Length: 193
Image (cartoon, rainbow, N blue to C red; front, side, top):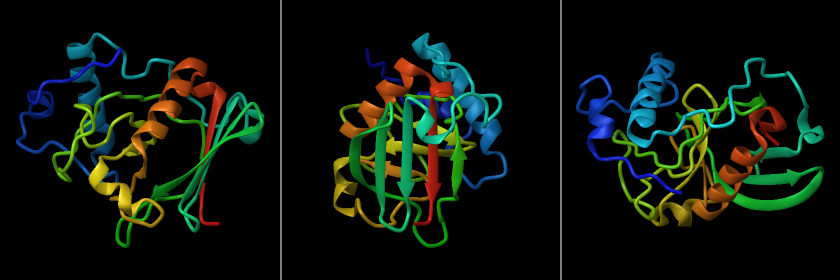
């Protein structure tokens, strides 16, 4: 089931009017930790529903994982493999100039939200789940997440503030898979193809 957070969820973190951050912020980890505490208090759900991948290289590796996600920044695509077989090929938007998405080659970090709203970069809402629904964090403040309809025309070219945007239905599918199989059974590789 989906849990919607009240607007003050984001104001409650640190008491700041705009507690949001860019993934590049030096305090991104601390801000996300505060978000986790509020998220869990309001929803009763863990921000890490499948645990935490303590060692980014422990367990399975790349296509040997049940869930393997490959994001090609040059092609602006995400390829999803389930148990070694192609299961999805979708357009994404990675970071635009000045906000370039870094390369990653690791497990997702375990933080998985249903609802997420950026106050620094507001705009749009997807079915009451905020403007970054189904966020799945890779490391620090960098996540793969859905995007509202107003951003769909930009999928296929760099347009984000560092995260990886994709259509929310695809994000929901990937979010559900990560919840089902766990982050230790997943791998994400982000690279400049």
